[in-house]
Length: 583
Image 1 (cartoon, rainbow, N blue to C red):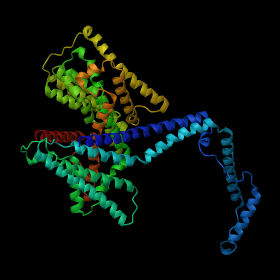
Image 2 (image 1 turned 90 degrees about the vertical axis):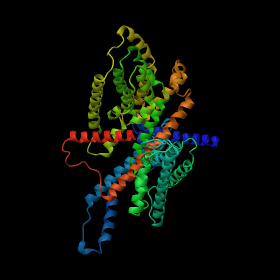
Image 3 (image 1 turned 90 degrees about the horizontal axis):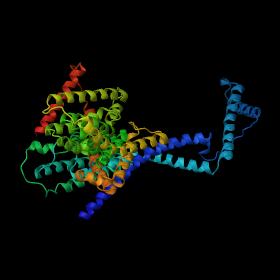
Image 4 (image 1 turned 45 degrees about the vertical axis):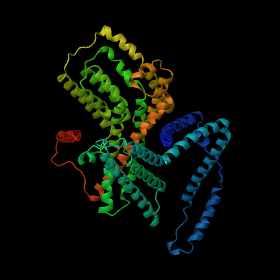
């Protein structure tokens, strides 16, 4: 049983790895193809003619215009001789102008054929063949994006179900909670399966053609497997206790996406008696396929970052200064804002770097509550900075705002947040604001900084290569493609070339070799991708309920001030979080 489980996990990891690498390769191929087209035009002025098949024009480049005009006039008169009441004269000048234009087109075709024969050689063919291969990879990936997304979503969601890692307000702690949570998950997955099957069957019975039947077929199979896994897990409770729990806590252990599916099932199955409704809205996730694949890549980047020593080495630079806990807390928030902005997911950074941040803060004597607060803030403060995917998603969904405006104000929100936190930390500090003397701390700090130079060089070289060769920069458009490559380089450098890896890894316990690092990263990524994408897909079903019921959520008209609106929303979130914490 353990062997079979191990092989299933390996197959899942390999499939997810192939899908993620395929997404990276597809994006890179687009840039390569664009750059090769530019290079081809630079090397051969007529490259767009040379890159295709040999032109074989069949038209006459030097026709007798007058003869053709006479023939057209005879045809015109023959066609109109039976319509004397609507008699019209043949416009010889207009016909001549049209024929002359056709002659020019014909001559350009013959000229292209001559150019092709004169300039085509083995080098042109080789270059065009390579360029065409990248173009085909790009086109194939664009055409298969939706298939890649649905397979990735269902595979990872199934794995997250098996690992009990879906997003919920509370973790399962005893058998009663386990039975309740997995019974609800089984029922929700069966609802998705039944809705998908009915959608496919009703369309087939009605003779309607589905735009992407393979996607719906994949959803049917995937939701059936998800139902089976949830049902099997329902009876696996050997490691759980039999202690009592309250009904409210049992409700909190059910994943949020499960409640969404159950609510949609009640609405579409009972209220509307429209079984395909769940799958109709669930598949709306394909409207933003590229965005959701980018989210998966960012999650992968975060899990790869977790397998590096970069976080610990960053904090090593500040150790010689013996900063007070409050100052180090502000430094940690500022430092972690950068990876948060580039991964676009606060939870991923907390998973990847949270342990390092918390341990370093506790090492200098930071009280537990402040250390936990800073750890949480390190994963959220940077979500308003460029090129965070969360902001891009808001700009895509809300056409009234621009991403540049959001990032502009986001940077100011970040500075304001950091300033407020700094003032609060200063007001509540418990020790003196003293640091190590400059003469004692500077040299050791510089020595520790040298350990970061290889990482800086890797980042600089990667950005230079992508900028010069592929015209791609580390922005919101290219970051999902470039960052995985940089993380690969980090992991390889540490395991193969870093002299102090084994020594530093004694306290951090990251994967000791390259293979295990990639395996752990892809395994952790699978869980996070499945949980997050499934939640996003199921949220579309709730949107469908609101849309079809004619109701919606709106800000009351009494909120005439944006500041009052912000205050009410903040208070609402604080009360909600406190109530969940109390449970």
